[in-house]
Image (cartoon, rainbow, N blue to C red; front, top):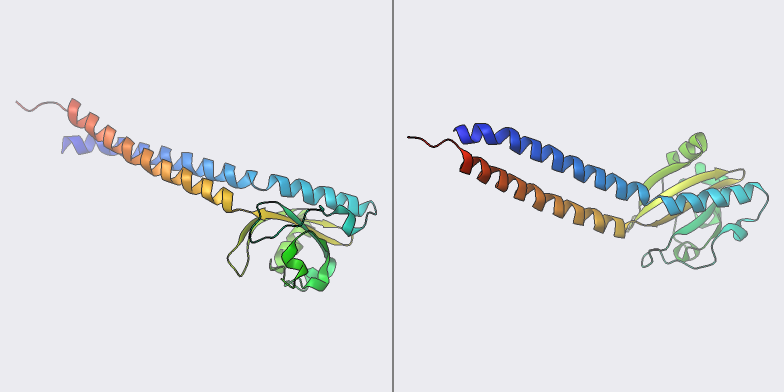
Length: 188
């Protein structure tokens, strides 16, 4: 019983430290996933506000959202705020192949309202087909610029970090229990 009384606070500390380390790694991966999209969206919105045409601010490489890890940009008309499905008619320019073939933009209306209010909105966008994207929306004078890229690689890295955290946590618990067991006072 003394072994458990000594080991339990150590086990709690190991659990808290391992959990904290994982949460920090997860947040670091997820927040960094937005960086390229934020740059693309802000640069495009700035160029649009200076008078460039939507087609001129979209990257020239075509991106298939189902297979590519490359970021894509969609310039949307301001009507998308009241029509959250973002029909292809609301798309002024994009390098996303699926949008050209009738796919819809599915973020909810509040994303665009919040982007307008805050100047920027970051979120994870999950399509009806289950694809997930690290997404940034930035308003400009005539609408919104949405930049996104697949979050599959980030999610894979987060899963690897979780697996390592669990292994480290179990190893830490086992090692600490063995140590407490070995150094326990011997009964005469």
